[in-house]
Image (tube, rainbow, N blue to C red; front, side):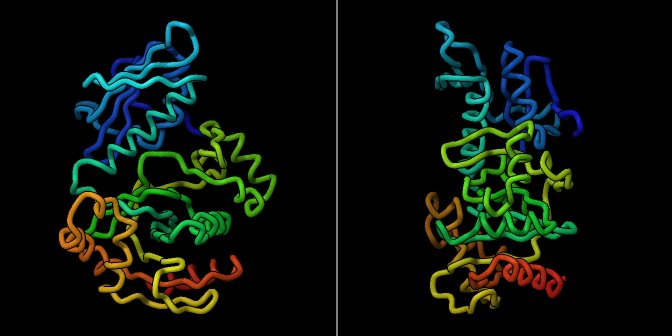
Length: 296
């Protein structure tokens, strides 16, 4: 496992970021700094001179029950328990900053997988099997970049995962197998959640994960209005794809529908979208691989 590549300036600061969003965590406690170095490792290669959007200073609560994190603007929150928990709380606040500002950042609630530097977004409503399919693709040789938030360039179709660990629910344990799940649990960044684990996939399988990847396709599971047989695929016309992408976009809750459509339309024109019918996972995986070959 490669050593964490963390840019620290000074040694009490861990910096990470993505695009125009750069974040800092400051602390004097080595437990906080060590954990932050592990959690933020994939996004640590940011320009040293670029100013941070948000900086958190973490100190211990005087009674020893937890930690207090304070931003430069004076916003403060406390977290009880171990150093892992306060670093995780900051990790999720940083992702929220990516989602909420600036307004020109386009994200989708989707899993992002890649093979041979070609990415696929998997979108679907709750319990449609999005994470399950992403796990099956991962087990079949795809790189798993993210399972929740993908940041995309609407003009080029380039995508990257938001700066947070992958989060898998416990039901994925049966799919991945006990031996593989044990490796997930043993990963340096692994941490238990209410319904599963968060971790970095490259700690589990040593498969390289690109920071960003050009998208070859978007795959919809259980798209409203779709009519497709089990494990079959069907091309979604760009005009329909735009409307189907809107509910998964971060912008739909912040801008008027016309503006969002204008932002999403270039993406839908650049990246083909397909419906995929639910069925046995091996056959769904074969359908995804076939799409990659056809779109290549």
